[in-house]
Image (cartoon, rainbow, N blue to C red; front, side, top):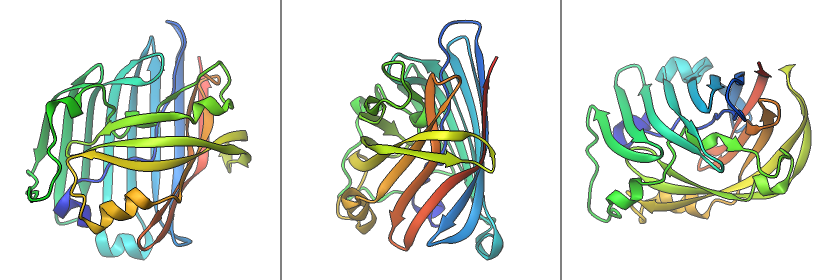
Length: 267
C-alpha cells in the first residue's frame, strides 16, 4: 500500500452520531462498498455508540477481489470523545493499516480536541525540504479523521442546508488540513438494508494547512479538486448526520464509498 511508505491515509469514510441529553444511547451499524472507476475494489464497515454525551466509533476497511489478492490491503480505526454544540471533541484516535508485508499504526492522544501526543510505529521518514512546518497551534481545536465525520445537526433539522455549511479542522497525525463543506441539494436514497429517505448532499474541498509539501503532485491535485461530495443521512433520531455516500475524484478515477446496509437506533 503506497500510503504505508509515505504517510498513513486517514480511514476517513465514516462518522457517527449525536445524542441530546443524558440517558439516551444511539447506535449506528453500517457496511459500505468501495468502487474505483466503477469497479468494486473493497468494503468498509462502521459501528458506534453514543451515550451520556460521549461517543466511540470503530471502523474497518479491506480491499477485495483481484486488487485485494494483489495488495492484501486493509485497515481499522477507533475514535472516542465528547460531544460539543457544533463539533465533536476528540479524546483519542488510533488507526492501523497493512498491505500484507508492512503494517503501520498511528495513535493520537487528545483531550477535548487538543492533541497531547502522537505515536507512529514504525516511524515515518518524511522529507522535510519544502514541507510546511507543523506547529503546536495546528494541533489545537482539531478533529481526528474518524471523529471529523460526526455532524451535529443545526437548527433542529437534519436537512437544513446549514448542516453543510461548515469547516472541519482535521489532524491525521502528520498533516493539518480543513475539509470545507457546501450545500448542494437533497436526494432520496434506499439502502439494501436499513435506511430509506432523504439525504443532505454537500460538496467538499480539501484545504491543506500544515505538514504538507505544496509542490507535490497529489497535494496540488487534491487542492484543485472540485469533484468531492458526501451524502449525509440522519442518525440517532435526527440529532446528527453521518456519511451515507462519499465520492472523490482521484488521479486514477472516481472512488465511491456507498452504504449497502445502514441502520441506526436510539434507545
